[in-house]
Amino acid sequence: MNDNNELDRRSFISAALSLGAAALPAGAVAAAQPASGSSDLAKPPAGGPGSGGPGSGGQFSLMRAEVTINDCEIEGTLPQDLDGGFFATGPDPQYQRLPGNIMFDGEGHVRVFRIKNGRVDYRTRYARGERYLAQDKAGRSLYPMYRNPYMDDPSVRGKSRATGNTHIINHKNMILALKEDAAPIALDINTLETVDPIYTFGGQLPASQPFTAHPKVCSMTGNIVGFGYEAEGFGSDVVSVFEIDKRSSKKLWETKIKVPYVGMIHDFGVTERYVMFFVVPMTIDVEQMKRGGIHWSWDRTGKTWFGFFRRGGDGKDLKWFEGPTRSGTHTMGVFDDGKKLYFDTEITAGNPFPFMPNKDGSPPDFKGAESYLHRISVPLNGKGTRYDIEKLYPLSAPLPRQDDRYNTVAYRYGYAACPNPEQPRATANSCYARMDLSNRSYKLWHAAPGISLAEPVFAPKSASSGEGVGYLMGVAYHLNERLRCDLVILDAEHVEDGPIATVKLPVQCSPQVHGLWVRGDLYPS
Ligand code: V55
Ligand code: FE
Image (cartoon, rainbow, N blue to C red; front, side):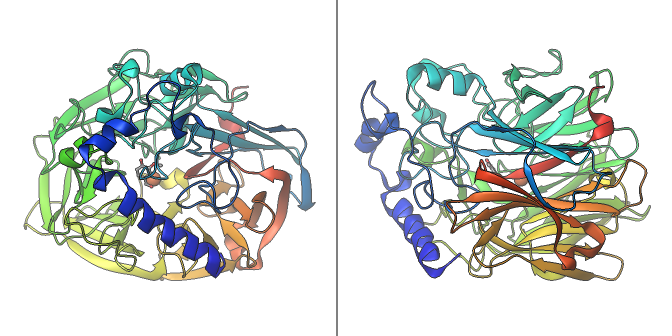
């Protein structure tokens, strides 16, 4: 990212904050409602660097075009043993965002690099949920503000808000596109055509059930452990937690717990025996929504709470531990050693998303948005009232990952995209890190200047290879080539050596929040 882009981004953020919905008088909210046939909301976004609102120029740049490229150009040597699909999703608005709306809003655009026998096929399709279909029919945005039902067009009342713009998991022959405020949208794993706009595991979850973007796949059974917050409707303090059988899709258990206050619960942790939550003060702000703003504001006076309960139980043993004001958005890995429960997460001292308002009206705090890997721990016997917290790495790493086969068990290696130091909580990352938790060391690969890296994923060499033996891959956006993209593939044990293969696309990639590697053996045969 050059200085100009950085300035653009910051000035957009301040423009968004001063002109944005939080500051809109009541009349302006009515004016901002998309009256039929009128307003900027009917215009498609222009796309390209600098035009997509906050974060444009990197992984959040708008694309809109659905792309199919068979047998992509490859530079270097694509490992012959690499067999699977690298999927990702991100918000790619069908229609121009309202000023003040944020980069986390927009219809999910799902993509896959299908890699097999030394060949790569690239394909992208929108996740066509009810929201996408209604807007496509109307020819304009019907959901003008991030997770704000007060702003929705009356015609969409009762429809699913699902965008599928945050993360994906694979389940049977489907890709489930996830957004934490709604049920998944199911796509065919091969074609990416939408097969179910509201996927409820065969009616076992209510269609209105929110479903986290960060469910965990059990390392021992392959089952999906998930949750939904605001589970009993808008603003509810109930979180529903459930486990779905990998093969039968049967719901094995479900329990409902209450959280200390209603905030964004973006991720969580699951071990063989426990389920854990970290509650942070990105709190629901109904007054702000009534003024036309987003769902959340950051309460810098809010405490944090770390809680755990027995997996598969009724939740009555839930125990909360208190801590200082912090945020933690993404879990890297979790484990328990029989005495203590350990939760490795990225932590910020303040509001992690400077484009989200602060409740007290203070300006964005970029320093407070810098994210560092920490380890939270609590005793399993439930003694004590406060959690322990320790900084693990000096690396800023808002998008930490692990070898996903170790989601629910003790793990050794972590991976992350590192933000360009000029860009706290970046949409532009300049390096990939591989961390060895056994000695707290790490290795880095720095991309060339002018490249912005999206979150990497780890792909094991085969289903049976040891932890960390395999490839680290991610998308590189070329900021000076109209965001043309490469997929870079590194040897995960030697990331510092740089890519062993590069898949070169002739076009821009669709936006990415998170990605997922689906091993070839998990594909339908
Ligand atoms: C995140 C992303 C979201 C969201 C809430 O990375 C949290 C965190 C892409 O949308 O709605
Ligand atoms: Fe996330």
